[in-house]
Length: 354
Image (cartoon, rainbow, N blue to C red; front, side):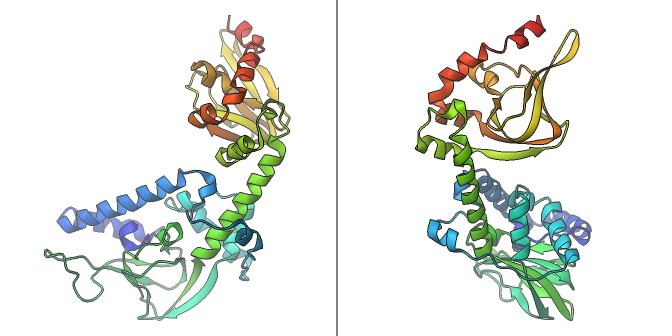
């Protein structure tokens, strides 16, 4: 939760946070604090929605620094790795930071978590200090305090009021991975000692940038060989690689649905998928997509009509790249004429719907 430097908990948090919410409605200053939390979450969502090359850490990093960066690896057993993975992937708020990560990058980030032991009474985070890391509680407990300004705007002495206690499996300090900002709360070790896993901002930033650069190079390599994209120059292909988002679909999972508005253009990266049309005679398969670089979804964008077919992943699933309607129009202008000509080739679509 933003007002508590991003602290969250999977069990204890639910009941304690519910009580805290009730008190917020009894106290105007708490309502203001809740507004700050929502503002922080909106900042995270906004950053996540920006272009991929900006990276989550949203700081400029030289290409040479990214390429030369040595991945930090702190030894962990398999159960510890799985515990960290479950926290990162299972926490709703962490979906913004970690929900989109693929296997390799997620493993690199898990490896970059360093174990630290801190004794009772130590403030591991102090309100107002610059944030530079995220913590996951492995063993023990911490208390979170928030100091709020008085009616005259001045901050009172001390740590302020205790707002929550966090135990094993809790995560806090995540906003520090997003941007450099003062900590919004003080976190004190409450148990005799507390074991935590710490992820510094620097490895998170560098590993994310390194992963993105590898993807861009890979995309640019095979996108330039896609027939429909061969008329694009290097700059246009590079721009396209920055804007494309990757998504893995399991077998039979729907990618687009017939009748719905079109808002994305898709390119098959790996696996297979098929297009199906539902009509008076039921559903019929009209096209298979089996080769890397095959594309679909352009009809709804070019003609501004509902989706003409449902596309599902087949075989062992499919990984597809997608680009938004707005970016499709802006970046793929040079090939829209060719795409419109290809629309006429889908005669089986029209024939089936008669």
